Image (cartoon, rainbow, N blue to C red; front, side, top):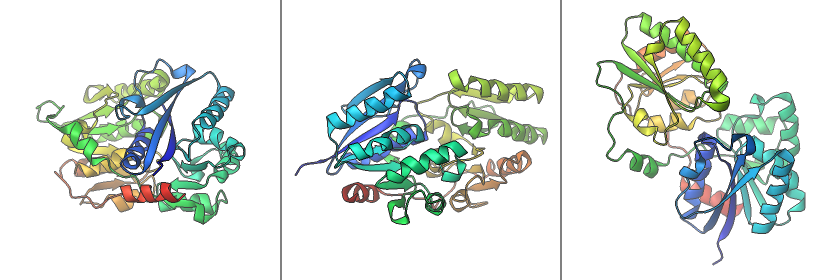
Length: 359
């Protein structure tokens, strides 16, 4: 039987969407699919030290694309698809989808499965117009939550039958392999250790988190915050802003920015609390991973599904969006909990196999 050939277009940077794309591909490779990765490295980020290549299984078919500009990206995408003649093309980021879908009329016989990184309403006015012109051509759009699905449908981007909800799965085998033989990265200093994971982008709300930490410390709690995520390059300005705020609050000694780590799971597993301070999200993979590792969560209610994933007093505590006082209370309560027993399960391998088989 001929295998179904799937081309995965992925940004070279390491983020939740990139890692989820690899996770999906690994589920397909166990079945009747042949997967190839097209890793896109923008010219201006070619010196970035982290890469999704570190997460792609060894021995995989990989092609690295170094784009000079946006027009060059469109041309190279087209030529790669023509040359590889895939059955299905997959992408999971706006800055790829908006270019790939332009070419669909010229690529007969190819199916396009796109995955939305965020809800339609979170995009700017200009991007919304582009989304209506491009995402609308997808054969299937994967939404991470029911609310995200209805956001695209209600705004007329695609009809309901072409948008499916598949909540992010957990790559349990990968996480457990990364944790094997690993101990706690935290010092045995008698303090509580709380952790946030994600690059220093405004979306992640680390400025709000620092304000919340200040309030937690002012109540006499002995707590250190560890932030696992890139803070150099294009993330430097927001990092500088956050650390300046920490200095003004005189709490910089309680904040440890450890940079990108290819094994953030040791920080999640051994933390007293994981904090999600994001202003907005699609469906945060790191929250899913924290729940899998039974680490208590303090999270902003930045999207509705978080209120279904995190049960107050059971999995952690919820906070009102962008409210540092509320987040401080959630952190204080969550870090006293110990291990949890989460209910979140996510989509299965069978869900993805069925989707790509029948698109």
